[in-house]
Length: 74
Image (tube, rainbow, N blue to C red; front, side, top):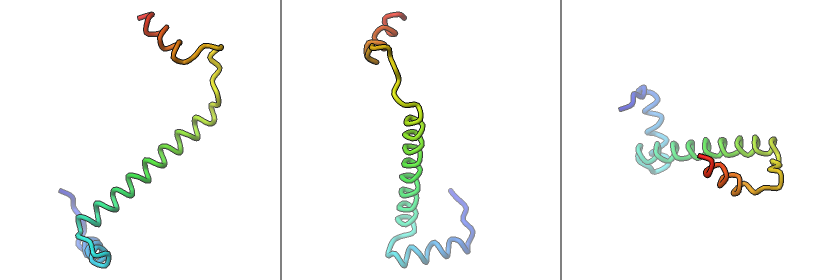
């Protein structure tokens, strides 16, 4: 259950009607768009940070080989 002030709810319902959507459908679409936007921002930030790091020198050894060696050492 969520609480929404009456005046805000009236505006929400009016916009949903204008879009020929139900209140639930309108809210669901808005939330999905917001979540997708947030996901894109996280991806963009991760890519930005990774680009700052640049390539990692593993000393001529593949990452897979380092993982195998690490697993074998436990």
